[in-house]
Amino acid sequence: MKKYVLITVILCLIALFSAINIASANLTVTDAQTAQAVNSLITYKSSEFLSVLDSTDEIKSISVENDELNNTDFYKVETNNYLLKLDTDDKNVTGIYAKASDTNFTKESTESEAREFINTKYEQLNLPEDYDLVYLEKIDEYTWEADFQKKYGDVYNMYEAVKVFFTPENNEIIALTVFNEPYENNEETKVTTKEAKEIVSNELNIDSKIISEELTIIKPNNYFENSNDKDLHKAWVLTTEDNESIYVDAINGDVIGGDCINE
Amino acid sequence: MSKKIVSIFLVILLFITIFSTTANAAASAKVFASSKSAYYNDCAVYAKYGLEDLGYSVSTVTGGITKSSMLDWIGNTGNGYAFYVHTFGGDGYFNDYSGKSIDADDISGNWDLVYIDSSYSAKTNELARAFHTVGYSDRCFLGWYNPVTTANSNSFNYYFWTEYVTHATIRSAALAAASRVPGDGTTPIRFYGDTSYDGSAR
Image 1: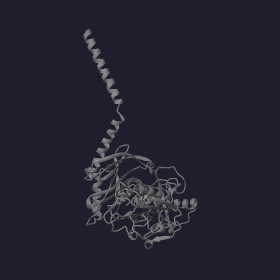
Image 2: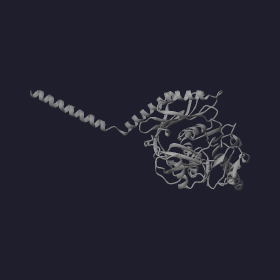
Image 3: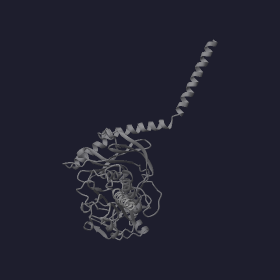
Image 4: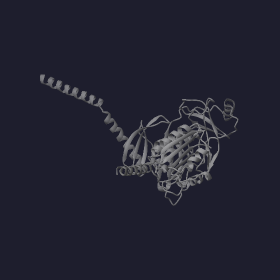
């Protein structure tokens, strides 16, 4: 009987010792191990993205960079032929940029060829399904720009979008950026165009004739007044014949920013 | 005898000094940015950073930039091979602070890297040809083929000069930077010249 008690006690001690070891092992993952795991994930996600672009490029370097305009960090991955940008949170690829691009072609692609090419690539790259192709234009002889954006009611959000430059002739994505900034405050528009124009006329004393207006989702800026507001707003963008734009919040009527054309 | 030795030594020293000055002189670049744009100062800083990274010795003129100061640079007979100007303009011309235009006929010289940061500056290749950047290797011209807002050009310049220049050809760097600015058609950048040129100073 004593023998069994002794064996049980020994087994319990071994179990306890093992449990302590396992627990302490979990707590002692080193920074180097974490960095190695993150790098492996970044390498995997980058390679997966590159394989869709028929590239077997090896990764030369991985670094953390800062986008000062948006005050965000990102991973920058460099290969022989591409620069990639990855989100620091989920490690998803949010940008790919060719270091050089071929322009030696004999034929220009048609709009339907460009549309088919970019829609196919978009699907293969597993980019967000709920974005619409809102823009497809040729920027020079062979290169096209396409923009996919998410729609909120009647307006598209350019900050939740994919912007891409590509050449269908050689199956090439030259530059692609994924923007992922959702519009959280999806309220009904309360300010009409007429009211927005009155606000501009009364509050800013702008006499110049307004020649166009567009309801859009936009970020405030310091064009008229200093602002630290970084949220997205639904706003009327009113453009004057003097090439100035004024942003009027479409929910509360505040003037939240503006811009002018470099002409 | 000792006079002769000293003379020979001085002549050799003079030759070495002249030779080393000529051989190591970095190509120069000049950045002009007009205060009529809310973002002129930032754009000048980005451009200076990028051009220095490319190996240029850079000087900057900001604020009330004048037609004569830009023409002085355009007509330089020294080592100036790169030119960036952030201002207002149109197809085939660009302005100084007071609105005086510089057009293709005013331009001379052989340039390696020219970027006229004003609306429509690259709608046609008129300015690119005037700077002799088309049809040569290791030369290029950048501009906008449509209107561009000052905020969008500022964002483009940040990405172009600080993130992509020196990591890609100028054409690819421009398209990468253009893709970083939100909005469809917001960055109508156009490139003329040698598509394989990476912008490095000669």
